[in-house]
Image (cartoon, rainbow, N blue to C red; front, side, top):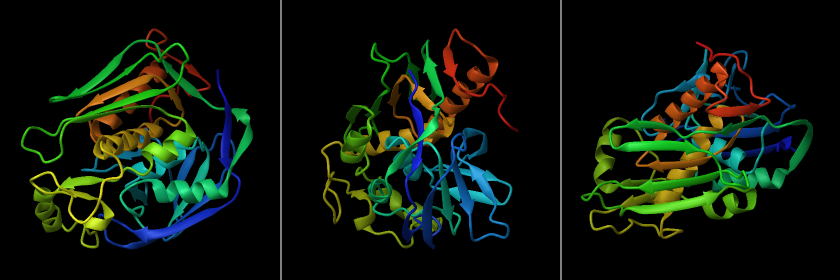
Amino acid sequence: MTRSQTTLAADAELSGVAFFTGGDVRVRFRPAPADSGVVFVRTDLPGQPSVPATIEHALELHRRTGVRRGAAEVQLTEHVLAALAGLRIDNCRVEIDGPELPGLDGSALGFVQVLQAAGVRELAAPRAVLRVLQPITVTAGEAALTASPPGGDGKTQLEYRLDCGPDHPVPSQLFRAEIAPAFFAREIAPARTFIAAAEIPALRAAGYGERVDAADLLVFEPDGTVRGNAPRFENEPARHKLLDMIGDLALLGCELHAAVASRKGGHALNRDLCRTLRTAAARGDTSIMEGIGVSTDPPAA
């Protein structure tokens, strides 16, 4: 069963600091027509070039996801895309005056709050759906990400198993969820980015995070305590990894009906699964999945 597409009922706006590039950035979310999807617009560049938030335009970046088409490049897309997908906002023009979205407090909560305040409006068009019929797995070393057929109710179920290794200060943990807007806003959106204190010097040396401090994310000391902050959930790191997964899978550009389970996965593996699913859809391989209203055009070069 498909649902109607949606967009925002009004504009929404917020400002913040880019975690990686360090600039001040303003973001404006605007309503968009049916079938336009999520499109990022660089208002700071001549001609205001745009890039669709789809896997065909995804960049291979370390510790984050981004998209680029021509001069239009936007990084750290996962938290905004998770907020939109988690609230079931399908069509949105996202205007940004810099190359990277703001990191806020390391979660998607700030984006969710302004989007909820703007409201959601239904559109007179059905939402495209990809429904997985057979398990599909992508791997990288010890990490694995599998999309399997959904349960009998057809709802999307997500699972993340976090295992950073025996010497990492973040303990192994698990988070499972069925995604619905109210649950997403309450239980997933507030989960913040995390890092081991030992990883910070290398990031600083690379020029990243110069305006980020312990209040903007969870910094785990070698003994497992959190520096200058308090966790919002016992398994907050696993919840944040699932948040990232929602944002990255939104690059499919349609709703995914599947049970998706990740073990030790990250942005690169999430993008690999998106590409695998889009390739299967382009082949029209109905033994693996069925698409309702999904384009079967091959991925763009």
